[in-house]
Image (cartoon, rainbow, N blue to C red):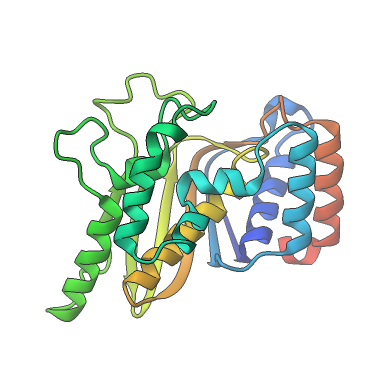
Length: 253
């Protein structure tokens, strides 16, 4: 098992990508099993790393960091909503339209998190349930600290879960007045998805913390399998990645 810890989201992603890059000199070997990344301050980023990655992704015709992040937490929708109830209601009215976009037809992460199980007659909003449980228990005997789980993968619904959902489940934990989040991925593509996923998870974590009256704690992401996927780890990306690793060498060690 590989373990990486960094102070901010950008350096965490960069250190993980560096680990994968060092695994092999051939494209197919740039992978790791059970890669755990802990981000001490998931709200903090290094602007030049994100901007550089976005530029490379755009030139390769791939989704931006922000687009990927929105699949986990639609930040702009939340910011333009007057309340939590309005936010969830507006999202539910958008789901059918969102699923028409290429890549969304098999499912959306925030949809699963706010409507569970995916084919249930009376689905549950897992995010809302976690927030209400934490608030209720903090006012009573006290929270149970590590029992707030949210599922994404559904054994009965996802018969052949290739491509979606790679994110399997989330665990919310309370460490004093800080809210921690641990995400478990079955597979993680570090060129196309990982940075955006980290951003989306951090935004979701910050939302739950804020609505629960707590501060933001560390974010941990465990990838059962992680890789710099061969078809997207092209020479342009690798040249940029090596340059940024060199510029931030001390922070990545």
